[in-house]
Amino acid sequence: MIYPSVSAIILAGGRGARMGCRDKGLVEFDGRPLVAHVLAAIAPRVGRIAINANRNTDAYARLGYPVVEDRIAGYPGPLAGIAAGLDWCPTTELLVIPCDTPGIGGYCVERLWGVLGEADAAVAHDGRRLQPLHALVRERCRENLDHFLETGGRRVDQWIQTLDWRQADCSDHPGMFININSPDMLHD
Image 1 (cartoon, one colour):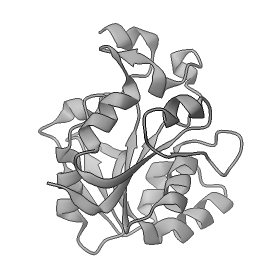
Image 2: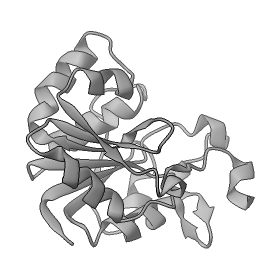
Image 3: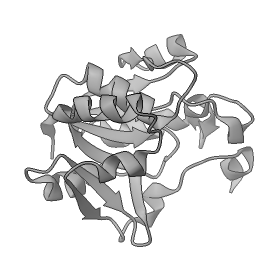
Image 4: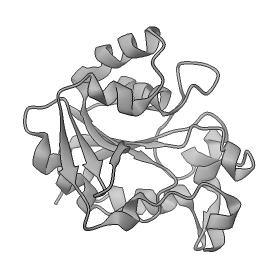
């Protein structure tokens, strides 16, 4: 199913410190860059996609999607990427997905959409813990996020708690939350 009112931001704007400072989204995994795995799963489900990247923007642009950079300098974390995504978002809902989860499935969008209702956000739960970087956030949350960042907030899970949010049970697909964080994980 396609959700035309949903846009997606693929978060690839970090420093990749645990990956030896390599740009994680462009690291090869099973013959393709990590970000390509995520794009393949998400593109058939949403109306529009952008990639949040702060370096190698030309390489990301060659993938055929808009590239949006953090508006907050210094790599302050995924919230800056979400803020950039909300600034760009041309629809009423924004799917947030990290670039380093090659097992993501399109059903993630369905699960999140299925519980969103009138809430501000829906967040995936893997059966053990909340996965706040796998979320569906309404565009109207931009002002709330700006305030959170301006007051020193940096953790996605803490920001989510300031919203009216719902939990999406994704415990039957725990593999979609495995993120590739180190060079060793590329070969496991």
